[in-house]
Structures are given as C-alpha cells and as structure tokens.
Image (cartoon, rainbow, N blue to C red; front, side, top):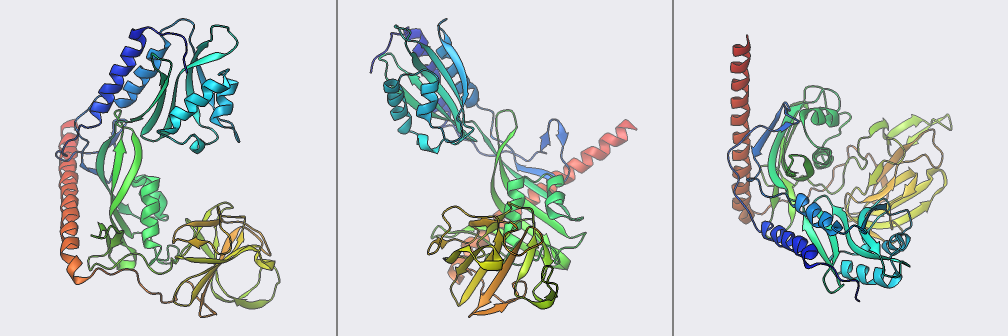
Length: 458
C-alpha cells in the first residue's frame, strides 16, 4: 500500500519519541522508605503507604500524546474523536470516518499484530488523524490512538512508505503497598471504603472470608479489619488500578482470622492462615456479594402461598442484577426455567454435593447444561423470576440428595500446605509481617508529627 509522501521531520519526531518510550520501559528501581499516602493533598486516615513509588520517570502517557499530536503538523489534516457504537466494528468506524475499505483493511491488519480488534467494545473511544486523498474522494488515515487497558495505549501511524505500523505503549505506573485498617460500624464495605480501601481490595477481602464467615450474623459493630494491598498510581499520583491483596485480617466476635497471600512452588496462588491452611473451602457460604439473609433454612410461612412448609434453602435479598457466583467447582446439571424456581441453575460438585440457585433474572455467559464452572465464576444474576414477592437468590445445598442448611453444613476444607512447604511459607509470612511493622512505625511517626503540629498551632 502506498500513500501520499510525508516530510521526514513529521515521522522523525514520533519515531524518536517511541524509541524513548521503549527505553523507559526497561527502567526499574527498588522501593525506598515509608511515607504517608495522600489524595489531593489530604491524608486519608488509617492508611499507610508501606512501599512508596519508584523515582519519577518520564510519563509515557505524555509521550504517547506527543507522538499522536505530532502527526498533525500539516494544515489539511483533521483530528476526529470517535466512539464505537453498540454492535459496531473498527471497520465500520473507519468507514464512517471516510477511510477507504482497502486502506482500512491494511490498518486493521497492522493493529491485529499487537491487539485483537474484536476485543473492542461498545463505548470504545478512538482518536483519529485523517487527511483528504489526492482525488478528494476519500480520507487517508494518518494515525490512530485508543486506550486498550488501564495501563495500555494502542498507537497506529503510517510510515514514510505509506505502510501502517502499530505499537502498544505502557502507561507509566508506580507500585505502592498500602495498609488500611479500622473497625466495622455497620457495613464492612462502607467502613473499609471510608478507611481508604479500594472497591477491588474490599471485594477480594470479602470473598476470602465468605468461606468461613456469615457476614450478616457473624459480624458485629466494633469488629476489626486490616488489609495490605498493592496500588498502582500514574505519574500524577492518581490510582490506575488495585493490585494483589497480600494480607487480610478480620476479628469477628473475638475471633482472629489472619490470611497471607502465598504462591506455592507449583505455581498455585492462594491465601493461608498462619498454620498453612487455605482460606478457600469446598463451597462458599455466601455465593452473592453484598446480600443479606432474608429467609433462613427450615420451616416457615410461605410469603406467597400463605401456609407453613419447609424452606429448603437460604434466601439472600439483593438488588436485581447482582452477580451470583458458583459456590464451588463443578459441572452444570441444569440451567433453564424450572417451575416456581424461575430461572434456575444446579451444579454437581464432588463428594456427593450439589448446589442450586433460583429466581435469577438471567443466566451467566455460556452457562448451560454440561458446562464446567469454577468457584467464584458468575453463573447468573439476582432477579425475581418464578413464585416470589421480590428480588432475591434462593440458594440450596444438597448432600447425597438430601437438602442441608447452607449456613451450618460442615464442608471439606481446601488445600493444606505440606510439612516440606511450610519453611518457604513461613519466610513469606515473616516478610509480610515486617511490612506491617513498617506501616505501624509510619503511623506512629505521623501521629507524633500531627501532635507536634497541633501544639505549635495552639
């Protein structure tokens, strides 16, 4: 493919900047001493940055912008801000921008070498630089830029020979280890959010304890929580995303439940208590996030039929559309409409266990009979189908064909580290405990500085 000639300087600048960007990707550094985390100049209480970011490096997002805007050096070039419509494709979008089909095909082929265009979704925002063709009948594509992830930008440009070159630029981020702790005064989610935890960290924290803690009846005001998680921030100090949760601690009703993230020599990542016992259980107690128990297992007066009969499961009240998770690994036995149960899924697990989920608004993606599912996978969404008075999940556990109470049934535990694995695990526990000590020292220093400052002000 060939196109109209372009000045060497026009492509020299972006090429040089791209080289700089690639070189910057190889730079690394070791963490320095601890410091307090702040947002917009205001320190967040109960939050300590254990490992501060690496020294500042040239901002790759700025480099990407320089590369993109340097394509607009000619007066007849035009910049377009476009958004992919529902059901649309990159080919359709380029066609709407006036780019010829043949040229669009070459551009898409170049992009495909670094990113699958089929992964673009509705709402994807793209920046294009175009210019009129010699015959004015179509537009030549000069360059394209779009964000394909929190830290990734896709760049496409045309070189001196008129060929398209695609590159993926990584947004410059800095890794921090953040500790957040506090007490629960009603909702764990709200308490942790106020203390400075991110949504992703709280979600992972909740999932870990969903195996062993009834969050409605097992948590009381005053119970404590503590967590250490990774946080990636950009060159402006804004959080890009949450990384791994390294440590979790929950103290429900005077119990002390500590969990450490650990990767075993065979590559399996899990969370273990100090004895090397996995937090993961055979089945989750609560297969829906943020729900409350609205009806327990046992005999009750049916809210629709009006008479007393056995209630063979536990009802979790939640808003329509709340994701429902597979309580354990297994195979889907049924995923269809099922009488008064409405939209219904039943999963067969090992050891003679089955779980059932009723009244869904819709099924999860690709959930059908015979499909193997993993624990925590979304299998459907809370709804009010079937014989119900409101949106909720009806959850059942069957053991060897007999219904049992999902909240009290004794379940097989997850993996327990072998004796020969414990030395390496203990080493990782000591490393994380040392990070916690650094955080405590930071908090003490901050509190002392605050007291001195208050005394000076007075």
